[in-house]
Image (cartoon, rainbow, N blue to C red; front, top):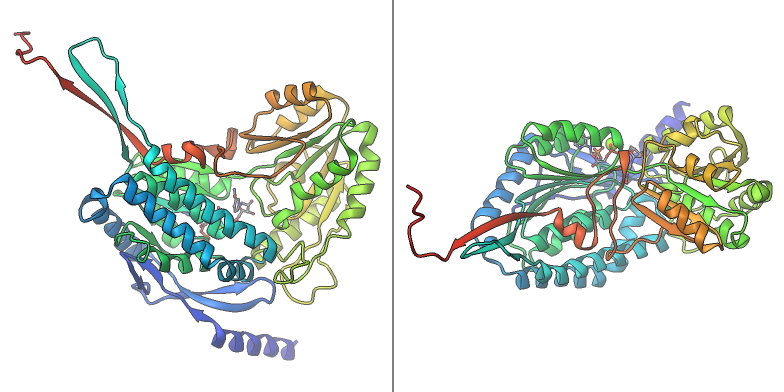
Length: 503
Ligand code: NAP
Ligand code: MG
């Protein structure tokens, strides 16, 4: 044991020497934390320290909010036109595309996601900046038809200073979903990436000044939820909080934001049903079930983690799905053939492993269930399938956020709808059938913000994203995404030259 401990210490000392030191981005400058504190960033595949980033605390939060406030109220930003903001966003998109190979490599090393998926994410992040670059000039006011000799207008104005707190599963893409609409709207922002995955956001910070963004408009601070996230949410000068992450933190954020009545939008994940009727195309169904739950190692807020299967095909389905799951290529995320990398962190590995053990007591195991013996390092877990799961089991009710599928049988359409909706969550759902009438009846009955038919997971910046029930509130992407960063001002212009004449 002693020699093992020594080996780990030696390895971490060696990797620490190679670790790149990053700074965070406040008021257009790269800075250390005021306290001088830093924390390590780990490659979850090798378990090596790959970087060190500043650990922001309340002092740094205050500095970032002051910069965002000053930028919102004075200087170049309030004078920019929608066209200017659009052009800045287009330049950011272009820069992301230019640096795509480097960003994907960094995302892959930092998060553990397969390189091919990282490449898609980086391209999607660029597309998001492009989309909101175009949207900047499509924000329209109204003329209200009031019954008087007056001109009544509704103006759309930026909501102000936005705090944006994001998770680790799609690091740069989540940053894009938050920053792009806020900048298009004319807001200023402070983004806090997840402690595990700050690197691509910090890399991206280096593009902002060159793209023409004035200092203080977008600030990126690194740190922990308690130390940096909470003071950001509580800060009286922050007008809006946009959060993606766990339900527990989402609830805490609503409470913290209540004192100053901030606008809050929440995207909190779920326990999404993926429903397979017996008349679905069987091969497509098996693929869709696997893709729905195992893409990005299952670290997906909309993961189809409850797989509901109609009884006539149930046994065949479990067998075919398990056989294919056992062949999923798990390995180093930088290898192009890899379909599943490690989980993001030791903490997440322990959490998912604990659910695998809970599952073994609650249901039957068809595939996986532990750590792959082929991988010597890294936070790898096998794609795991439990079947004969009761919808009341913990593994069917709690968000695991890893590659753990629960397969649940159902008897008919009504039964499928009942089980599907029997969850506190309501982010996403999917239904597979060749019967368009049945599929659409189910779509209408499902209480979820996103429903796919004969597919699961494709996500587009043009279409709304967000949850029903305890999956949160507000919508991201599309025109809905920019709405969340806008206020509406009513302006009444009297066209009568006479006095009001009341007294
Ligand atoms: P989390 O704790 O909700 O973290 C999300 C973000 O919130 C991170 O930036 C986090 O900072 C920050 N945060 C944490 N506590 C905070 C506080 N008191 N005030 C303000 N901000 C705070 O999620 P996690 O710990 O990374 O993962 C735990 C579980 O959350 C997962 O297993 C999964 O079930 C769920 N999750 C859901 C999503 C989703 O897309 N809906 C994404 C990720 C995780 P730190 O990075 O320092 O924690
Ligand atoms: Mg956390």
